[in-house]
Amino acid sequence: MNCFINVEDLGPLDKAMAEAFEIKNDRYKYQHLGKNKTLMMIFFNNSLRTRLSTQKAAMNLGMNVIVLDVNAGAWKLETERGVIMDGDKSEHLLEAIPVMGCYCDLIGVRSFAGLTDREYDYAETVLQQFIKYSGRPVFAMETATVHPLQAFADLITIEEHKVVERPKVVLTWAPHCRALPQAVPNSFAQWMNAAPDVDFVITHPEGYELDPKFVGNARVEYDQKKAFEGADFIYAKNWSNPGVTNLADYGKITSKDMSWTVDTEHMSWTNNGKFMHCLPVRRNLIVTDDVIESPNSLVIPEAANREISCSVVIKRMLEAL
Ligand SMILES: CCC[C@H](NC(=O)CCC(=O)O)C(=O)O
Ligand SMILES: NC(=O)OP(=O)(O)O
Image 1 (cartoon, rainbow, N blue to C red):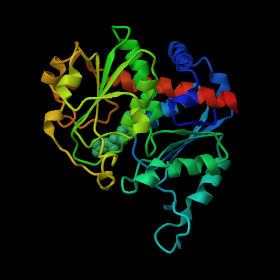
Image 2: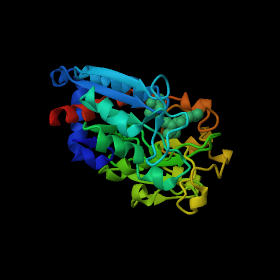
Image 3: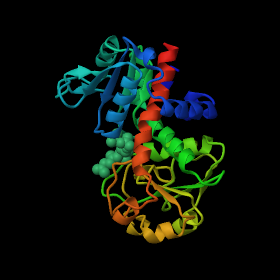
């Protein structure tokens, strides 16, 4: 596996899920695979869970780990070609990437969407440059349009906690004070659509339609209450306007409707539904204190499963070296 961006990169999902549960039962089983191999994790943006769980997974697999926070100590990087570099950027990504590739065997990249140029973001321009120029296998640690490590962990969590064979899973938009990427909901939708036994529904205000390549055949319900009815899992996330119905709205906040905040009344509409969120979460914007602290909240085991999803991905990449 030379890159990990989309669900299909893992091959048959049932096999990947079986590997996840095998590793969860013995997370040091494949420690031999990473001996004398180095993972380089490159962060253009903040992180807690991805930073910690990916290092833990790499160490479980016997790897050495290097972490680079590009905006804290490295040279400021120019990402555009053809630019005369007479400003505050001392190095071009097209030199920095192959240099970083010299010092490692695998690369993980976090580079969020800029949310100003939809074409640039949805082409995964930065990630594709790492894939093209690093000479190493590359996996996304949330890039402009995807967060597959998160979605894989989410699916593991749903599989562990479902009480019916075909659970109803609802991805619900919720309000936020900042313009956030669509990467998390995009990948969540992609992985729920790929899962064999999930009744998947997406609910959001009109105008917040996610890119059709991620929505697939999922049902979209603009009435949040109707969407929540009978749900087994509620996955809440904010995202900025994806610019699908109006390109000029891309990356903007076009709704701050607080009636979409997930509270106990919302959860009363469900089938004793479990609450999920990738974290970090803005309490009492996305979800109320009572809901995220309730016995039905899975946000902590969901975060714990990030170590497992990443272990499967790194294992696959090491096996393919
Ligand atoms: C895993 C989620 C990462 C990121 N979240 C944020 O940037 C939240 C920042 C904030 O709430 O200020 C996002 O929404 O894609
Ligand atoms: N869910 C997630 O990726 O968290 P971080 O942004 O803290 O890594």
